[in-house]
Amino acid sequence: MVESNYDILGVNTEASQKEIRDAFRRLVLDHHSDRGGEDEEKVKKIIQAYEDLKVGKTYPDSEDERLKKARVYTGDSEEERKKRNLTLSGDVAREMKLAEDWAELLNRNHATGSRLFGSKELGEVEFERKETGELLIKGKFWAGHLTYGGPIIMAGSITSPYFAQQEETKTTITVRNGNFMMLDPLQNNFTIEHGAKIIAENGDIIVGNLLGIKEILQDPQGRVGIYITKEHFTELRAPKGKVVAGTARETVFLDADTVVVNNLINNIKVRARHITIFGSTVNYNCELELRAGGSLVFHDEGSGFALSDDALVKLENGKWFKLQELKTSNMVGHGRQITYEYLDNLGKKSEKSQGAKINLGKFFKKK
Image (tube, rainbow, N blue to C red):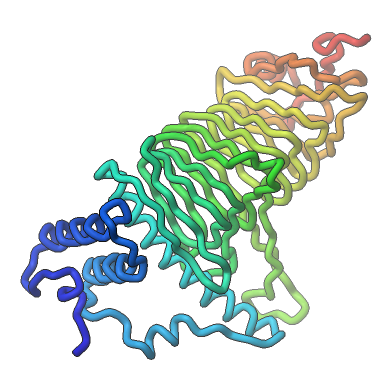
């Protein structure tokens, strides 16, 4: 006889949401490794039963349903590869939801433990909650939403199935309290790519190199030979903190109180009160938006600074300047600041309505 989700949790069919939730928490803790429980499949079964009951599903998936969901498409055609990737991404996204519930339960009970979640085809990911409250994630994060109440340490890269229609399948990692950090990201070559989103609601984000993606699609109206470009921004947001990253390339959005980054290459949008750039490149449709009271600092020590004609600095009040026009023949940086107030005052003196042509030769001293 097939067990119902009520049977799995050990509650009757008339159980309240609170009774179901309490039973779920008790069972997961009873099977916790610290209490001698080592059956990971049993824990996953309990978590899945709880998730099913939350949406009114009485019985777990049948064998046929599981096979259908886990179906792997083979072949070399674009359509077959897309179907396969969508299927795998959906499977991983559901696993990440289970991981979220498991981690949050341990966090609420101040318990420690580690479990594997993910896909055998794409690679499983190890989640470990430490005594300090940090959640350590080891492996590549492929898809799905994950929210955690404490700090997250990531030992692996992050990607997103940008081609998926369902937003819950795409990658979004949210830290409610604390920092999101990658372990030695540049040395380990850990990246965040393909439209993944990282949010630190009350903390900082410290990561490696960033990469978005642009998707070339056929015209939605069916016109032959006409294509459109859809941008999938890789996004990092720390509204009350700092974003520290390596090079941002090809469709990336950074939004924080303070942004510290190396190079900005091709369609990068930065919004912050303080922006610091350590590299020598800001080019191809890049925009730096300063909030009131902020500043922009260039630290490059080289002999030149690579700026394209369309790289802009915008102010929160709507004024804007071409970075090329802020460049001097000896813009080596040395930590000098261009403040919001300085640019705002220059804008007031300008008679041009479409931007401000100015000379910062007196601002950056020549050798």
